[in-house]
Image (cartoon, rainbow, N blue to C red; front, side, top):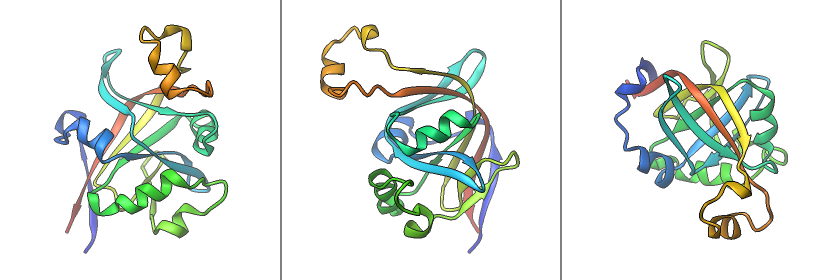
Length: 173
């Protein structure tokens, strides 16, 4: 079996966004073929902003992936079938600083046409160009219970908004 990725438009994505982003989780990856890292995420979204199709995702500063999302202008979001749940769990529980996630999980990195990294096992890939990045700010919450509950250590996420420059849908042939 060979996996073929076809380019689709963002409007052709048929996934239930709430299921894909939260229940199934996804990988955020930044870097290039010689220097990249990936992490599992469960918070994010897709939409239309500034006349562009966009994704938004969040990375805490203590995550190793943060170095990569800060250094590089692009990131990918990779979505997987449920059979890869163990891989997503591993990538969320172990740091690429301490382990070789590719070796430990069997993930196969592939380069996009523009040199960004995604994974052969993914079923949907969103390649994104960063448009905006800023830390979540405690004073901006209108529900003061959220920072108390989610950020007791005051380690606020960096919010990234990226233009979706390419969508790849994987088919097994």
